[in-house]
Length: 138
Image 1 (tube, one colour):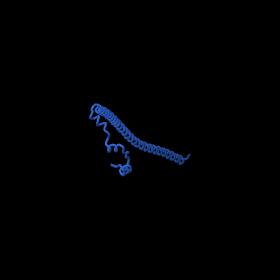
Image 2 (cartoon, one colour):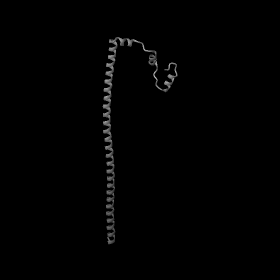
Image 3 (tube, rainbow, N blue to C red):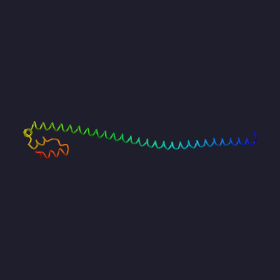
Image 4 (tube, rainbow, N blue to C red):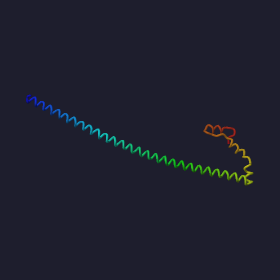
């Protein structure tokens, strides 16, 4: 082998090693860029997860408050029903034990009051207009 050929092989070998090192460098740069992008994406996903967790906690608190409100309303309704039943019993006792109240309760209702009880249910403006234009309107 001649010196020129050996020099050419040496230069080719150096170029191959340089190319190999440059390729490795490019791969490491690409991997580093992907790692940076992945870290940013992970941070974004963690923020979204934290917001969703907070929303879930808030919804749970809202549901608990609504359940308490419903329970309170049900208790109030039960108390009112009990008070109404007690009041009805008291009225019946009064009518049964008090002769003037018993005489008043036996009296028939006046004609206008009977008409009010006989009137149909009005469910809209057309029904109301038809009722008012009828013969027995108030």
